[in-house]
Length: 60
Image (cartoon, rainbow, N blue to C red; front, side, top):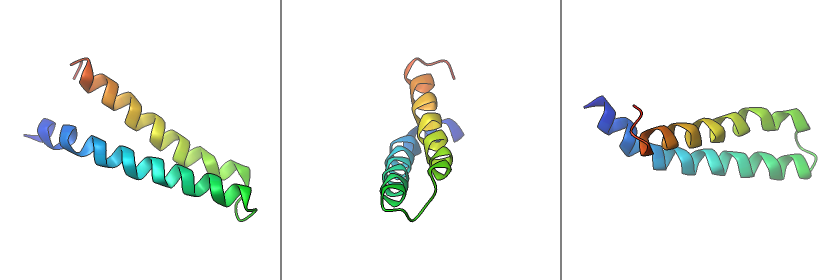
C-alpha cells in the first residue's frame, strides 16, 4: 500500500521540486538570495530523480 502511495506521489513531488529550484535560481539572479541557497532545492530535485530511477528499475 505504501509503495503505491510513494510511486503515485513521485511525479507531483518532482514538479514541486523543480518549481522550488527554478524559483530559487530566479531569486539568486535577482539578488534576493545568496548562491548557497541553491543547495536545498538542488538536493531535493536530485533525490526525486534518484528515487524515480530506483522505482523505474524495480530495485525497491
